[in-house]
Length: 556
Length: 75
Image (cartoon, rainbow over all chains, first blue to last red; front, top):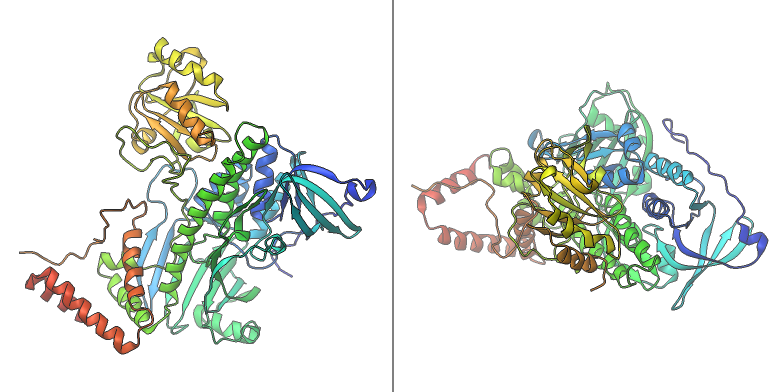
């Protein structure tokens, strides 16, 4: 039992199918009520789609799981209605420090720009995130969340997926048009469908000790290479809520996991690190190994794999849960358009295309971090230590220090949904880029760009002054009303004012939008419901916007 | 007189990088990959040959002397 957290026990309710006996047909079933499955179900329900969410347990995650949630995941969680709760409970941080032997050699700022709503990262025990998401899901009548419902068989045909679900009261069958597999690294759906996951296991073991203590260390990520208190290995320290501190000791492949977990072995390691005088209690101890691997295809006809079921990375970089939440963010708006008949089923292939690319980037970065942290050969160790010994004094070497390249969203450059630029733009907001945030003002109220852009396609039209929008511009926008999918047209204006035609006006009060989007009078951005850039132009032309929109929903 | 550049300097003209750490990480991965499956003696030989190749490419002896001197610090 944890001293700082009591696990909720959610009520199992016998499913109606068990009494009625008839097999029901659903539009979407999500398997696995972890962060990714919950995010997917909430997103669907918020879009008006009923969803059945099955989980084989009746509580949130147990023990030391994910603790770091990155800015991009927080922006998605904001859209799902739990961002504020997570940030209020979590420990926000932006600074990471790296030590080699006795000295600090390097520190970094996660968020290099000012004027973003969310911090680079928060630390929050996974069970809190899940608890907040469950609470949110339970507020939504369209989410049917069933605990103690374990899928024991799965079978798909051309037009449906059939599941056998085991409950404490017996087994029932159900059918669904689409199945989202969010059942984690040991996905039983993946196994039952005889699908492979390809990659490698790293030959190293790590000890996680979550300890409760009062300490006034700053809210920063501290990483040691070869410290005096744990020679030859690495150590990571993170602050979590409730005075819980995560300490991660590299042990080496030869370590005996059962022995290392015993308090008589763990406590001396922690005392060596913190000193004999520091009072602490062990909250949780485990020993883990990890894998870097992914499924070749995230879509198998009517089954869509998300999160750890589809891909697993080393923990260095916090690219696990963070990328899983982005999987759901990428998939759900597409699935919703397919369900309502607006987009062809092939749009779902773009989910696989874009998130497989993101998974490759995450795997590449986490594999590189792993090689640096746990060098696989003596040549690699020599280079690693050479880099660290130069990093204190020479900037080029600091840039090579890799204690984890922390989760940032992928730029979906080259996605088939993007419309390539036909005009010149500076900066980072290329088609496929995740949108940068910016502070704005609407009717005298402060708001953030990423809070304004959500759930739907938007055309952001930058103008010097709203009142100057003329009849020609309004006429150019009019055909967008007949687009196959709703596009909200919004003016982003250098100066406040009232626009003709009742257009929504967002004032670029700090000038950050113009700066980050290289915007000038007439610049228009078409942005996707998941806050990635689809296309951009220097002048507004509804035909080009409609063509880009058709491409972005897979109609080309 | 040229001096040794110790600022981050890796780049790939054929590639657009979105993260500052990526070009350096690309190089480091290539470097470690070059040593894969080699014995320690073979790795040492590879390193020696690599240094000679790069030193010749740099050419400027003042730069090379500065690099040699830094490389020897605290060793």
